[in-house]
Length: 279
Ligand SMILES: [Zn+2]
Image (cartoon, rainbow, N blue to C red; front, top):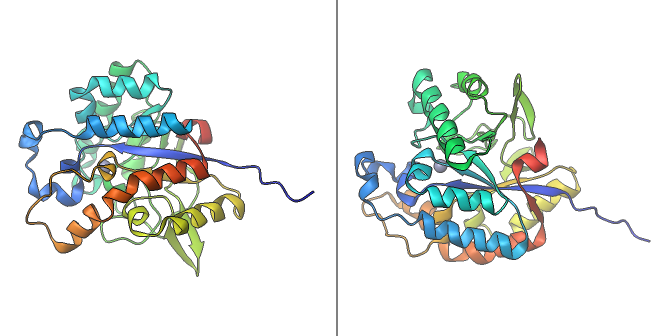
C-alpha cells in the first residue's frame, strides 16, 4: 500500500466588485458617476455561482457594501446557495488613503448593511487592494472593534501596490478575537511567491499555479487561500482608455483564460468557505 494523500480543504474567495471599482482603474472613474456605469458584476457572479455549483465547491464572497445596496438579489443568491457572505468594506477606499475614523465607519457600515440584507452574521473582512499592513496597524484594531472575527487583508509578497513580504504566511491571531488569514504564498529560494491568485493566476501557466498550491497542501500540510474577482471572467468588459501600459497589461491579460483555468482549479482541489476551513 502506498502513501495516501488526504486532500486538505482550501478556502476559495471572491472579491465582489465591478471593473470600474478596481484601484488601478479608479483614476479614470469618478465615484459620483459609479451609479451611471452599466454594471457587469451581476452577470459575472451568475457565471461564478454556476461554476461553483457544477463542481460542488463552496466559497466566501467579500462583497462591497456599495454593490450589496444596489444588487440585493445578488447577495441573497450567494447566501441561498450555501456560500459565505463577507465584507469588502463599503466604498472600496484603500485603508492607506483613509484616517482611522473614516476606515472604521466604512467597515462598520458595510457589515451592518450586508447583515440586514442577508439575515446572517458577517464574520470576515478583506481590505481593498490588501491595503492593511505595517503603515497602518491601527486598522486591525478597527476590524476587531467592528465585530469581525477574521480578516484576510494581507498578501505576504512584494508588489508595488500592496503586499507585506515579511508578514506571517499562515493564519494567526492578529488581535484579541481576530484571526488574520493571509492569501497563500509558496516559499522557494527564500522568497514568497504568489500562489493565491490575482493577476498572477492569469499570467502564469495553470500547471505552475497548481504545483504551488499542491506544495503548500502536501509539503507544508496547510490550507491554501485563493482569490479572484468577477471581472476577471469577463473578456467582454469595456476597455478603459488612457491607462498606462502596465495597468492595461495587468487588468486585461488572459481574461479569456480565467474561466477554463478556474474550472481546472475547482476540479483539482477541494474548495470550502473561509469560516469552514479556519474558524
Ligand atoms: Zn477590491
